[in-house]
Amino acid sequence: MGQGSCSQEDSFDLLNQFEHVLDSDPLIDEVGFIHPSQFTLLDKEAGSSSDGTSPSFWNQDHKLGISSDILIQLCKAAKHAFLAALNEYKRHENASSESLTENISSGVSCCSLASKVMKHSQAVLLLSSDFGTAWNARKLILSKQNQHLEAFTDELRLSRLILSNSPKSEATWSHRRWIIKMISRSFSTPQEIITKESELVESIGERSKMNYRAWYHRCWLVSYMIIEQVIQELNKSKRWAGLHVADSSCFHYRRRLMLRVLESLKVKGSNANDKTEAHKIWMEELDWNKELVKRYLGREALWLHRRFLSLNWIMYFCRNQSSETGESIFMNKETGIFFDKEIHLLESSMTVPDNKFEDFQAQALHASVYILWLTKHIPELWRMLEEKLGTEKLKCVLDTVDQERPSLLLHQIDTFAAKQ
Image 1 (cartoon, rainbow, N blue to C red):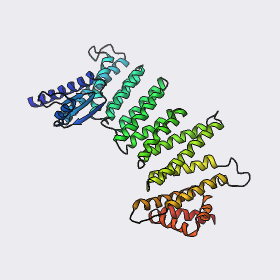
Image 2: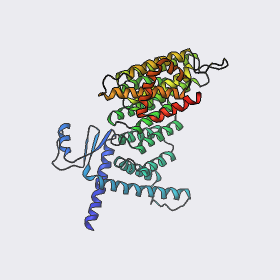
Image 3: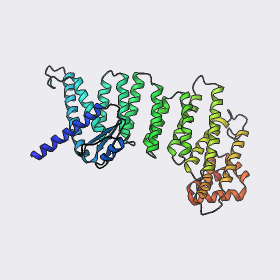
Image 4: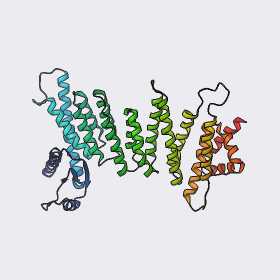
């Protein structure tokens, strides 16, 4: 009994130490869990000396390390303190709403109870980032008071700190979106916040590969961007995408940006200059994608991106305004020139110099699937494909697809049969 009580006291003492470290250094920008054996090494690297004891926390240069030995008891103590503070806060809120004269919280103000909830929930979330009750408690308190912008920017800082150790925490990314919505609702959305959010995702993307939650967050930000910012983001993300051609998330983000460019053309007040600019952006993206396709063989993410670019190019920039003449709204001179270039790209990609090189085989497959996918969505292109390739080359394309994607080939045959 005495040992259990002592253990509980030790746990709450650790919690007090942890929260003191957080309060004493509000500029902490990175947190992590480390083995106790690493503390000495960290001290040497930082040029500081240790007193010989095994510390629980390491804090230098706004970096915080937490000993992995104390995580369980520290997390239990933080959750216990948080839930107790939350229950007390809710009881006080219920008493206030019912206009009771008795002070259930023994003279403690609602403001101080809210501060306790925020303090303990911060400790909990740094240890267990997906603890939804703690996030919801913070939302409850932030939404009930008339907060200054600083309160929300502090919340962004906290969630950024949590992401330094848990970059794929869905609850944390979701909370950041909630904060931005609150800022947008109560204040005008500062464009620098959106810019910093985008930069945050890119920096996390460098450390945490295939982080779909982070990239989804970046795609979500596009709806808050003005068109000038969208174009800036296209230019800024281009280099990153070119260095990470296997990561489809960044190309998905670029597609979201480019759709935003198209959406701006539908807004009342858009003019011919806007369409000229969009035409230029699309052409540059197609040319850049073609360079990447030729440089990095067999990268499916690049071919998937080209599907999007080609289909929307034909739909928005090659399409006739009307079909009163009886001509297909898609089949015109510009479409013919564009598709002719795509067939040349297909032919160059079908060359496999040595069967031992899987990249060449993958390139041939992705090129064949791409061209058939395009004719599937715009059947008028099928006849042009037959004429340009000829029987032998077309058979080679179909055989390549049949080996890996027979379902697509069956659909193409059905489409062709329906036209006869």
